[in-house]
Image (cartoon, rainbow, N blue to C red; front, side, top):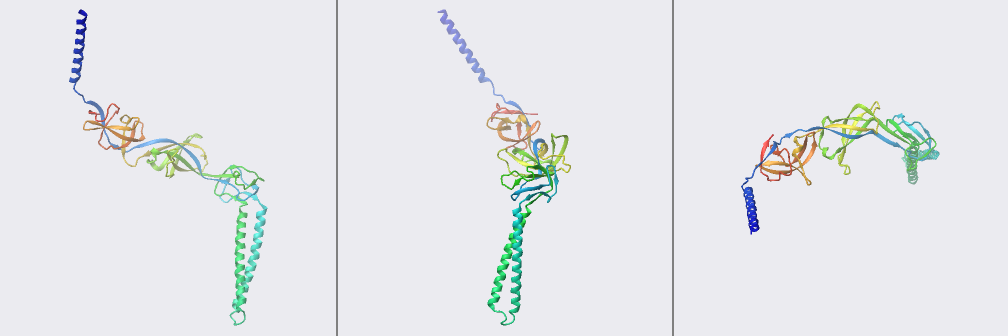
Length: 360
């Protein structure tokens, strides 16, 4: 009996305690959370970024033979400085020379026949003025022979010019001013096969190209003063300047970047093509943009947002990021000058949460 009374008393006490806790929760009034905020302003942005680039010759050509034959003489070697039109090497191909001589003889013979028939025809025309001196048939025959000889002469002339042009290929000349950087054949080697290595390679290194792959996120920026500065590991402590001259105009889908090409003079030959360049460039936006602290950007698995306060309630605004500064980041989205933005965004501030704005 005593045990039953004790059990009943305990149950009653527990129920009363639960009831009191439940009533306490109901009586607790809702509270507005205070959050630090700032007013969004537009501002200009400028940043120095570091990228890598490749230094290339302004012009580069592989020298091959246009005709088949044996190298008779090579006048240059690696490091040789050459001028445009200079003979780099000669090809021995006797059959081409003999065909050119044969074509010349045919051309001379056809020319003689043409001049003879032309003279005959012109004389008959003059004589035909006298009535009955020349028959119309003889005049027509002379005209036909003159025209046939003229056609034969023109054909032989074209043939001779063709062989003469082919003969000129025996002297391989420099296409531009430059330096010989490779030599893959020696005198006496047979050349002219399509699969052969180039005999020589020539580069114009007095002017160089600096090519830099610009990330897709930065292709819309403006380069300050249209110049970059760069250095190379081969020449430590030396800073060079290059001028932006052209852009590729399209994004490479494999690297998600656009090639920008810069140009620099290299009269002293200090910089070598093929060097690796460490490039520093200062970029800016043509128009003002929004720059906010990193802490105000909330990154979830699905998106990036900033939290805007509107009428005392939170709103999640989707944004995308642009240029990152040391302590701030550029953002784009459905945001406007004068918006109230949460300084330290977190996932606990769900949309439509009522908060109290606390300005920094």
